[in-house]
Length: 227
Image 1 (tube, rainbow, N blue to C red):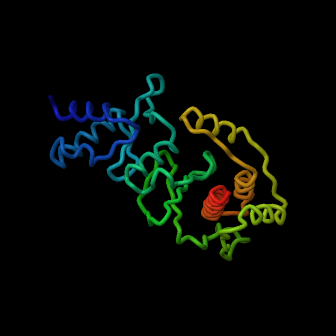
Image 2: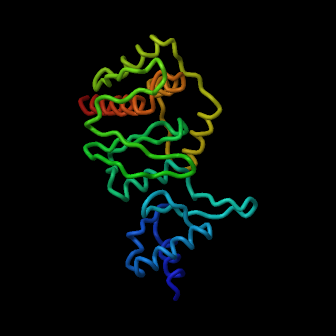
Image 3: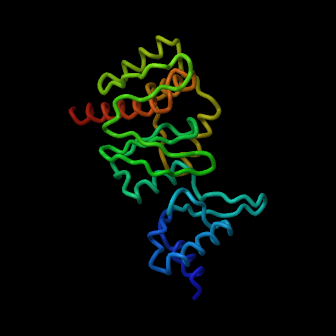
């Protein structure tokens, strides 16, 4: 059996939607594996997410466009878990569909690996994150101190200060529908909604929003455990 056929069969037999080059390395030499991976990308069977990271894909019969089997959020989380950048119990992400970057909480890990697809990318925050740079607009020259306790009260006070409230959009509904179809249950709350509204209003950068969301979710988990 040709190497391309063996690699294709190996990819199809693997569970999940993400394939690592390391999982295929034993099938041939480094140059041979690289050549076949490029051929599979050209044929629309794989999409590259990052160095040595690929998503299973297919070519649309009508448009000819190569599309991943699942949405970017699902691919990013699966890739991060496979690369051991996250644990199954850590890794809260920003609400889907907000901006072009998905941000994961990596706990104690410091991660800089690049993952992306079609203009979307993955960012990371960890336990050492205390201050996050604001956006480069004229009203955000200073850095925001990110609280680790009383986060919900902080977010509500910030929204009142800037007279910001959350209004559900068609894009929000679309993002939730896509996420549910991917098998994830969307459970947003008032604090998460206010964070989205503050980001849309330009009062928070993506990094500030990510850090506040992570701290809020951690605080909420601690409250549940203490009951």
